[in-house]
Image 1 (tube, rainbow, N blue to C red):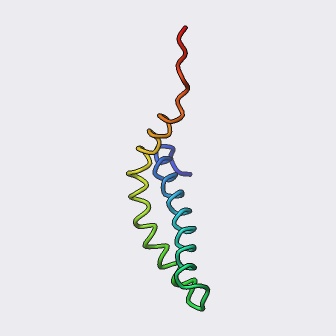
Image 2: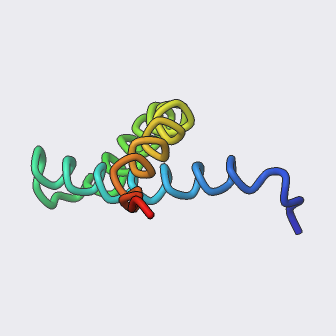
Image 3: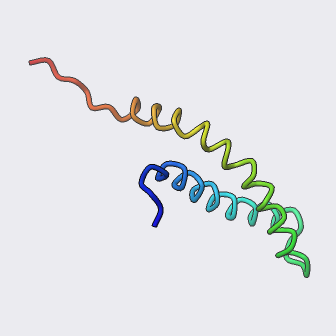
Length: 79
C-alpha cells in the first residue's frame, strides 16, 4: 500500500495518465485514422504526452484548485 503522504502526486499522475490516454487516442485517430500501426503510434504519442502532462498538471493543479474555490465560494450574508 502507498503511504498517504504521496496521495497528491499519485492523484495527479493518475489524472494525467487518463487524460493523456484519451487525448493521445483522439489525436492519433484524427491525424492517422485506424491503420495497422495505430496502436504503436498511439502508445508512442501517449508516452510523450504523459511526459508533458504530468509536470504540467503538478504546476497547474494548485492554481486550478484555487480558482475553483474562488468561483464556488458561498456568498457571505450580513447579519
